[in-house]
Image 1: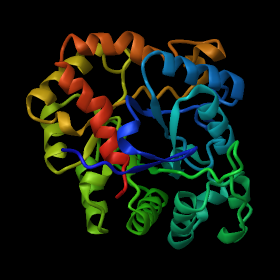
Image 2: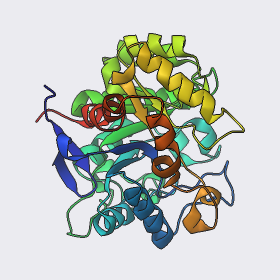
Image 3: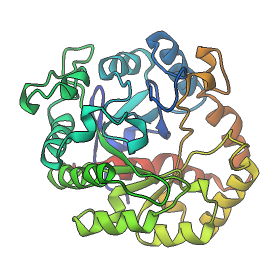
Image 4: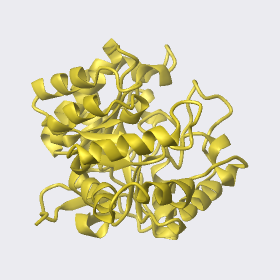
Length: 328
């Protein structure tokens, strides 16, 4: 029997067993200097995409946009309230490539960074990330408020590393995430480039007291190696599969076979599924394609042809609820 815990959404705390089907990794707002012209910044259009995801069969999502990349916590809360889609927001900072060399966020020390993450998890997310860039004391930063006037809190810490490399900045973020995790119990998502340095990241976080079972390694499917994935799963880590609709990278046929082989190898209890559509040009409501509904309408029917329904339930419902839940 799975223990029911509590999950922090942008509209408040909910029992983990009420989340339902979860898209573990997507973005309703996002902008980055490495993706010029592909911003996701229009509240009405993002609400339409959230509604499409909801209509496609998902009842919850993790919005994995961290500090400094165009996130809008108050708008997230409004969209969640309007669409009925539960949203878990992220604190944290992404890999170094997403921040310009003169960005003040790249010069924040571990202690300050950890204090910001902890505050976003327990007091409220920043209403405007520019305040952190200005150097204002952490305790004076303005808190985002939802439609009911209550603070919008994060429920997960987002971090990231580069291809076979952990820069000084990225190590600072991982250290700060470990500290904030130790104080709050919040799970940690780590963006990996083609699943490189996965063991090294788990080793680093474990050395700082983070259990592998509180970590999700995003984009693991970019290296569709079932042997490696089962190694990481056997350590206790969650693996995020989010490469569908990207045939220029890995074909969906390969991703489907990978998922089937990992489940057959006993790893189904540590898989998560998302789409990671982080560009305006890939959202229908922004004039692009395939949109957030693709995951439920196009990919899941194919996955259901490969797996038993119990395995689908595990990946979409049980696993994300377990990862996101704190003690009840």
